[in-house]
Length: 96
Picture 1: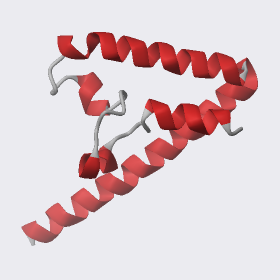
Picture 2: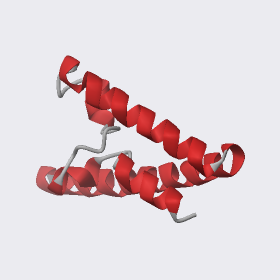
Picture 3: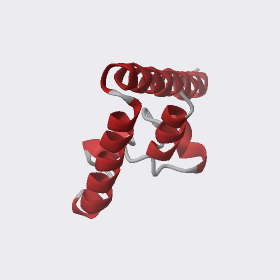
């Protein structure tokens, strides 16, 4: 029925988003091997500064907000984020 389709769709979105976040961690690790861990951490911090500086220029419906690149989604909404929070990405890089 329609309700089941909606539930399955939501669950599938959560799983797909989880895989996307794992790919981001993998991409970060690969970039750290190629360019160096400190360079990658510096790049992520630059992205974070840019997002913090520009977040008020964009509505919550913009593509940037939709991709959750800033990592600002919290609670249940974080399950739908395609990117891990930048702080978590930096922490993962520091443990490489």
